[in-house]
Image 1 (cartoon, one colour):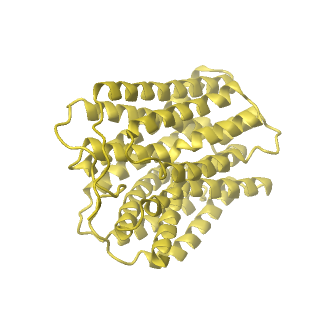
Image 2 (cartoon, one colour):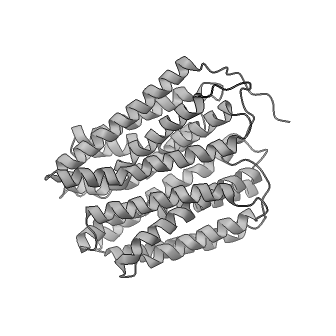
Length: 398
C-alpha cells in the first residue's frame, strides 16, 4: 500500500506540473503581465492559443512515440522541459514567448499521457479509486499555482518574478518525485483500468457525434479557464478576494475528480456527461449574470467541479463504444478537445476587436461558451436516443 500511495502522489504531482504549470500557470500570471505592460489581451490570447496548439501537437505526438521507448524517461524529459520552458518565460524576450508556450503545451500533453499510462500500469490490481486519484493532479496544480500567484500579487511581484518562482517550484517538486519514475513501464492502455462494457457493431455516426460533443466541451470551458482572473479584476477591481477565484477553480477540480471516481460504474456515462456539461454551462453563465464576488465564486466552483470529471467520463465512454483499439479513439478525442480549446482565445480576441467595452466583450464570449456547452449536452441526449447503451455490470477481473 505504501508503494501504491507513493506512485499516486508522484503521478498526481507530475500531472500538477504538466497541467497546473505547463498549461495553466499563464492564467494567474496574466494579470501581473498586463499590469507590467508586457502584454495586452490580444497578445495574451496569442500566447494562450500557442499553448493549446502545442497541447494538440503533443497529444498527437504521444500516439506516435514508439512503444519501445521507456515511459519513465519520457515522463522525466517532460518534467525537465516544463521546468526549463517555464524559466525561459522569465527572460525579457517577448518574441520568444509564443514559441515557448507552444513547446510547453507539447511537453504538457506528453507528460499527461505517459504519466497516466505508467501510473495506471503500476497500480494494476489496486482499487479503481486509488488509480483515479492521480487525476487530482491538474486541479491541485491549478490550486497551488493560484494560491502562489495570490501571494505574489500581494507582494507586488512582476510577471518575470512569477515565472521564475513557478520554475523553481516545479524543479523542487520534480526533484522530490524523480526517483519514483525508475521502472521502464509496462504496456497498458492509458486512462482506463477495466474491461469494456459492450461489444458488437458500432454505428458509423456514433463516434463522430461523440467527438463533436467532446470538442464543444473544450471550447465551452476554456474562456473561463484562460481569463478568469482578468474577468474578476474587471468585475470587482478593488475586492480583497480578487485572487481567490482561480485557486477555488483548482480545488473544485480536485473535488470533482474524486467524486467522479465514486459514481456507479454500471450507469450510462453519457448521463454523467450531460449533467457535467450543464453544470459547467451554468458556471460559465454565472459570472455574466451575477457580477460580484459571490457570483464569481459560484462560477469558479461550477466550472471547476466538472473540469477533469468530463474527461474521466468521456474516456470511459470511448471504452464502451470502442471495445477494441480504444486508445486510438482516446487520442482522437483528446485532439478534438484541444481543437475546441484552441478556438477559445481567437474568438475572445475577435470579440474584443469589435467591442469597445471589455465587460460587454467578456459577457458575449462567456455567453457563447455557455451556449456551446448546452449544445454539447443536447448532442449527448440525442445520442442516448439514437444509440441506446447496452450497459451491464462488468465481469470480474481475472
